[in-house]
Image 1: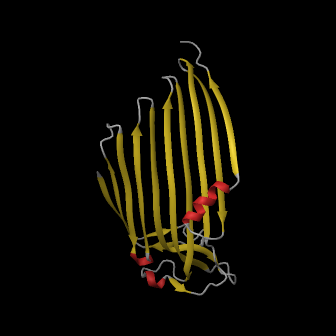
Image 2: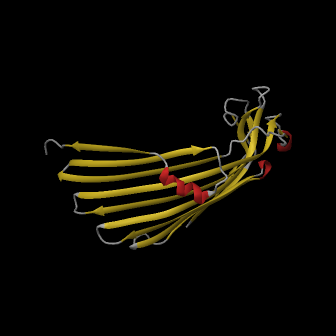
Image 3: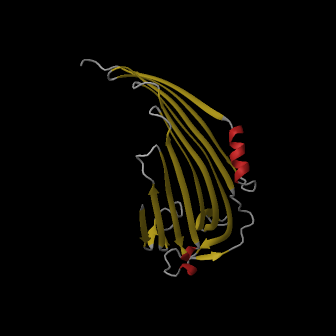
Length: 239
Protein backbone atom coordinates (compact mmCIF):
# COMPACT_ATOMS: atom_id res chain seq x y z
CA UNK A 1 0.00 0.00 0.00
CA UNK A 2 1.18 3.50 -0.82
CA UNK A 3 -0.29 6.70 0.61
CA UNK A 4 0.95 10.16 -0.28
CA UNK A 5 -0.02 13.65 0.86
CA UNK A 6 0.58 16.57 -1.51
CA UNK A 7 0.30 20.21 -0.49
CA UNK A 8 0.36 22.84 -3.25
CA UNK A 9 1.07 26.38 -2.10
CA UNK A 10 -0.64 29.45 -3.59
CA UNK A 11 0.82 30.28 -7.01
CA UNK A 12 0.21 32.47 -10.04
CA UNK A 13 -1.29 30.72 -13.06
CA UNK A 14 -0.58 32.23 -16.48
CA UNK A 15 -3.11 30.11 -18.37
CA UNK A 16 -6.11 29.76 -16.05
CA UNK A 17 -7.90 32.65 -17.77
CA UNK A 18 -7.16 31.36 -21.30
CA UNK A 19 -4.92 34.25 -22.33
CA UNK A 20 -6.20 36.68 -19.71
CA UNK A 21 -4.34 38.03 -16.68
CA UNK A 22 -2.31 35.83 -14.34
CA UNK A 23 -4.47 34.64 -11.44
CA UNK A 24 -3.37 33.74 -7.94
CA UNK A 25 -4.66 30.23 -7.24
CA UNK A 26 -5.10 29.17 -3.59
CA UNK A 27 -3.42 26.30 -1.78
CA UNK A 28 -4.60 22.75 -2.44
CA UNK A 29 -4.27 19.49 -0.51
CA UNK A 30 -4.45 16.07 -2.16
CA UNK A 31 -4.31 12.60 -0.61
CA UNK A 32 -3.53 9.68 -2.95
CA UNK A 33 -3.93 5.96 -2.13
CA UNK A 34 -2.69 3.01 -4.18
CA UNK A 35 -2.98 -0.57 -2.98
CA UNK A 36 -2.83 -4.06 -4.55
CA UNK A 37 -3.18 -7.64 -3.43
CA UNK A 38 -0.46 -10.16 -4.27
CA UNK A 39 0.11 -9.77 -8.03
CA UNK A 40 1.78 -13.19 -8.22
CA UNK A 41 -1.61 -14.86 -7.70
CA UNK A 42 -3.90 -15.71 -10.65
CA UNK A 43 -6.50 -13.24 -9.37
CA UNK A 44 -5.60 -9.92 -7.80
CA UNK A 45 -7.32 -6.68 -6.91
CA UNK A 46 -6.04 -3.13 -7.04
CA UNK A 47 -7.41 0.21 -5.92
CA UNK A 48 -6.33 3.73 -6.79
CA UNK A 49 -8.09 6.58 -5.01
CA UNK A 50 -7.58 10.27 -4.38
CA UNK A 51 -9.22 13.06 -2.40
CA UNK A 52 -8.52 16.76 -2.85
CA UNK A 53 -9.63 20.02 -1.23
CA UNK A 54 -9.10 23.68 -2.10
CA UNK A 55 -11.12 25.56 0.54
CA UNK A 56 -10.50 29.15 -0.62
CA UNK A 57 -12.10 28.47 -4.02
CA UNK A 58 -14.70 26.03 -2.65
CA UNK A 59 -13.18 23.26 -4.79
CA UNK A 60 -13.00 19.57 -3.93
CA UNK A 61 -12.91 16.19 -5.62
CA UNK A 62 -12.50 12.46 -5.28
CA UNK A 63 -11.61 9.55 -7.57
CA UNK A 64 -12.05 5.79 -7.13
CA UNK A 65 -10.61 3.26 -9.57
CA UNK A 66 -10.69 -0.43 -8.55
CA UNK A 67 -9.21 -3.03 -10.90
CA UNK A 68 -9.72 -6.79 -11.08
CA UNK A 69 -7.03 -8.79 -12.93
CA UNK A 70 -7.45 -12.49 -13.69
CA UNK A 71 -5.14 -15.07 -15.29
CA UNK A 72 -7.73 -17.64 -16.33
CA UNK A 73 -5.12 -19.99 -17.84
CA UNK A 74 -1.50 -19.81 -18.91
CA UNK A 75 -2.78 -18.45 -22.24
CA UNK A 76 -5.62 -16.10 -21.21
CA UNK A 77 -5.56 -13.06 -18.92
CA UNK A 78 -7.98 -10.18 -18.58
CA UNK A 79 -8.77 -7.19 -16.41
CA UNK A 80 -11.75 -4.93 -15.79
CA UNK A 81 -12.14 -1.83 -13.69
CA UNK A 82 -14.49 1.15 -13.39
CA UNK A 83 -13.38 4.69 -12.66
CA UNK A 84 -15.68 7.04 -10.77
CA UNK A 85 -14.76 10.67 -10.27
CA UNK A 86 -16.55 13.72 -8.96
CA UNK A 87 -15.10 17.23 -8.91
CA UNK A 88 -16.32 20.60 -7.80
CA UNK A 89 -14.21 23.33 -9.43
CA UNK A 90 -14.97 26.69 -7.86
CA UNK A 91 -13.16 28.91 -10.34
CA UNK A 92 -13.61 27.30 -13.74
CA UNK A 93 -13.03 29.70 -16.65
CA UNK A 94 -16.39 30.47 -18.31
CA UNK A 95 -15.56 33.11 -20.92
CA UNK A 96 -15.94 36.89 -21.01
CA UNK A 97 -18.94 39.16 -20.67
CA UNK A 98 -20.70 40.43 -23.77
CA UNK A 99 -19.95 44.05 -22.87
CA UNK A 100 -16.16 43.88 -22.59
CA UNK A 101 -13.75 41.19 -23.73
CA UNK A 102 -11.49 42.02 -20.78
CA UNK A 103 -14.17 41.14 -18.18
CA UNK A 104 -13.35 37.51 -17.41
CA UNK A 105 -15.87 35.13 -15.88
CA UNK A 106 -15.50 31.99 -13.81
CA UNK A 107 -18.14 29.63 -12.50
CA UNK A 108 -18.53 26.69 -10.19
CA UNK A 109 -18.56 23.43 -12.12
CA UNK A 110 -19.92 20.22 -10.66
CA UNK A 111 -18.48 17.48 -12.82
CA UNK A 112 -19.10 13.74 -12.73
CA UNK A 113 -17.11 11.20 -14.70
CA UNK A 114 -17.57 7.46 -15.20
CA UNK A 115 -15.48 5.04 -17.26
CA UNK A 116 -15.02 1.29 -17.59
CA UNK A 117 -11.70 -0.10 -18.81
CA UNK A 118 -11.41 -3.68 -20.05
CA UNK A 119 -8.34 -5.50 -21.36
CA UNK A 120 -7.72 -9.08 -22.47
CA UNK A 121 -4.75 -11.01 -23.82
CA UNK A 122 -5.08 -14.39 -25.53
CA UNK A 123 -1.91 -16.27 -26.48
CA UNK A 124 -2.89 -18.93 -29.01
CA UNK A 125 0.76 -19.91 -29.27
CA UNK A 126 4.03 -18.40 -28.13
CA UNK A 127 4.10 -16.44 -31.41
CA UNK A 128 0.42 -15.63 -32.02
CA UNK A 129 -1.26 -13.21 -29.61
CA UNK A 130 -4.61 -11.39 -29.66
CA UNK A 131 -4.99 -8.23 -27.53
CA UNK A 132 -8.26 -6.41 -26.76
CA UNK A 133 -8.87 -3.01 -25.14
CA UNK A 134 -12.09 -1.01 -24.70
CA UNK A 135 -13.07 2.03 -22.63
CA UNK A 136 -16.49 3.71 -22.64
CA UNK A 137 -16.26 7.11 -20.94
CA UNK A 138 -18.75 9.87 -20.06
CA UNK A 139 -18.48 13.15 -18.17
CA UNK A 140 -21.21 15.63 -17.21
CA UNK A 141 -20.56 19.25 -16.22
CA UNK A 142 -23.06 21.69 -14.71
CA UNK A 143 -22.24 25.38 -14.20
CA UNK A 144 -23.55 27.83 -11.60
CA UNK A 145 -22.32 30.60 -9.23
CA UNK A 146 -20.84 32.86 -11.90
CA UNK A 147 -18.28 35.45 -10.80
CA UNK A 148 -16.34 38.23 -12.51
CA UNK A 149 -12.59 38.56 -12.04
CA UNK A 150 -11.78 41.91 -10.39
CA UNK A 151 -8.49 41.45 -8.51
CA UNK A 152 -6.57 38.50 -9.99
CA UNK A 153 -3.57 38.71 -7.64
CA UNK A 154 -5.33 39.56 -4.38
CA UNK A 155 -4.10 37.47 -1.45
CA UNK A 156 -7.61 37.32 -0.03
CA UNK A 157 -9.52 34.85 -2.24
CA UNK A 158 -12.83 36.53 -1.38
CA UNK A 159 -11.63 39.75 -3.04
CA UNK A 160 -10.54 38.22 -6.34
CA UNK A 161 -14.04 37.74 -7.80
CA UNK A 162 -17.40 39.50 -7.71
CA UNK A 163 -20.58 37.34 -7.84
CA UNK A 164 -22.82 38.23 -10.80
CA UNK A 165 -25.95 37.03 -12.55
CA UNK A 166 -25.25 35.40 -15.90
CA UNK A 167 -28.62 34.21 -17.25
CA UNK A 168 -27.36 34.05 -20.83
CA UNK A 169 -24.37 31.85 -20.05
CA UNK A 170 -25.04 28.10 -19.79
CA UNK A 171 -22.10 25.95 -20.90
CA UNK A 172 -23.52 22.77 -19.32
CA UNK A 173 -22.37 19.80 -21.38
CA UNK A 174 -22.12 16.04 -21.67
CA UNK A 175 -19.08 14.44 -23.29
CA UNK A 176 -18.93 10.76 -24.10
CA UNK A 177 -16.37 8.64 -25.89
CA UNK A 178 -15.69 5.02 -26.71
CA UNK A 179 -12.23 3.85 -27.62
CA UNK A 180 -11.57 0.24 -28.58
CA UNK A 181 -8.65 -1.67 -30.09
CA UNK A 182 -8.19 -5.22 -31.31
CA UNK A 183 -4.63 -6.26 -32.20
CA UNK A 184 -3.52 -9.58 -33.68
CA UNK A 185 0.26 -10.06 -33.65
CA UNK A 186 2.00 -13.00 -35.30
CA UNK A 187 5.75 -13.59 -35.18
CA UNK A 188 5.91 -15.70 -38.32
CA UNK A 189 9.65 -16.13 -37.97
CA UNK A 190 12.09 -14.98 -35.27
CA UNK A 191 12.20 -11.18 -35.24
CA UNK A 192 9.64 -10.79 -38.07
CA UNK A 193 6.04 -9.78 -37.30
CA UNK A 194 2.69 -9.53 -39.06
CA UNK A 195 0.22 -7.25 -37.23
CA UNK A 196 -3.47 -6.50 -37.85
CA UNK A 197 -5.13 -3.65 -35.90
CA UNK A 198 -8.77 -2.60 -35.67
CA UNK A 199 -9.48 0.72 -33.93
CA UNK A 200 -13.06 1.76 -33.10
CA UNK A 201 -13.87 5.33 -31.97
CA UNK A 202 -17.01 7.20 -30.89
CA UNK A 203 -16.81 10.81 -29.67
CA UNK A 204 -19.75 13.15 -29.00
CA UNK A 205 -20.31 16.40 -27.09
CA UNK A 206 -23.78 17.83 -26.45
CA UNK A 207 -24.71 21.06 -24.65
CA UNK A 208 -26.93 19.35 -22.11
CA UNK A 209 -26.13 17.72 -18.78
CA UNK A 210 -29.65 17.16 -17.49
CA UNK A 211 -30.23 13.57 -18.64
CA UNK A 212 -27.86 11.89 -16.19
CA UNK A 213 -24.92 9.50 -16.33
CA UNK A 214 -26.90 6.34 -17.15
CA UNK A 215 -28.50 8.05 -20.14
CA UNK A 216 -25.12 9.35 -21.34
CA UNK A 217 -23.46 5.94 -21.23
CA UNK A 218 -26.46 4.23 -22.82
CA UNK A 219 -26.58 6.72 -25.71
CA UNK A 220 -22.87 6.23 -26.36
CA UNK A 221 -23.46 3.08 -28.41
CA UNK A 222 -25.82 4.96 -30.75
CA UNK A 223 -23.29 7.71 -31.60
CA UNK A 224 -21.58 7.81 -35.03
CA UNK A 225 -18.43 5.72 -35.12
CA UNK A 226 -15.10 5.72 -36.92
CA UNK A 227 -13.30 2.46 -37.72
CA UNK A 228 -9.69 2.20 -38.80
CA UNK A 229 -8.00 -0.98 -40.01
CA UNK A 230 -4.24 -1.24 -40.18
CA UNK A 231 -2.06 -4.06 -41.50
CA UNK A 232 1.66 -3.95 -40.85
CA UNK A 233 4.50 -6.34 -41.49
CA UNK A 234 8.13 -6.22 -40.49
CA UNK A 235 10.93 -8.47 -41.69
CA UNK A 236 14.16 -9.08 -39.86
CA UNK A 237 17.04 -9.41 -42.28
CA UNK A 238 20.11 -11.42 -41.45
CA UNK A 239 20.69 -13.39 -38.29
